[in-house]
Length: 328
Image (cartoon, rainbow, N blue to C red; front, side, top):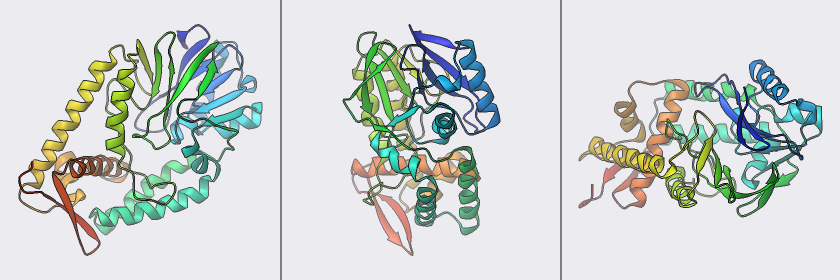
């Protein structure tokens, strides 16, 4: 059953095949009819989307515009199929254009990036293959889609007769955008801010071939930016809406501070790889869970390094982290 966010704007909940569970998408009933995120390329997602739209008197063929908040399959997997049925325009941040349009080529490039990264963080060879297989397993839930309009930081988008501001908030994903309506102070935070869990800052390559971005560092910076907007409510990409954004941000910051301290304790007076830290931190994991645990661990190591509390040394293609004397 759709939930009204504002007049002419509704949240619809779409199942996914992923452990994260359903994804929250949003649709306007005021022209231009706009779908914000789509769900996955999966029968259950497709059927749920059709059913939720029908509750609002809409059909997929009526979509005039799709806004993709970030390039993760649960948020855009059905976009190509919807475009073929409706001729809707697709809008997203420029960072997402290559992953969305050149889907197969970018996936191949990322496979190589992650193959090298798993070696550098000390993952044993047999587990590297299982992680690679689990990552590729999700590829079937999305397909390439052509982008018609790029939206950047500071742009305004008309949704349900309101002018929403675009905020580029990299962290969980490099091209993630939030939308904010200054009039009602409603924030569409998608996966940048979630009420019940902390968003995972997924390790990604730089789209221009530069140094690997420090996603957790970016995530923490942009969390505070969103809190500074003083939203009345934040409607999220998964789970329930947030009515006290400042409280949620404080909780997330406290979580990351505690996690960083735990990592310092695990390093102790030794030199440890990210894998050697992640295993006692998260327990014995495998497949995609192992990848996500390593992503979060790498993020905290990046954060501690930027604070000048640890440093990395490289031996035999693997990075090991150690405390800097006088810190931690």
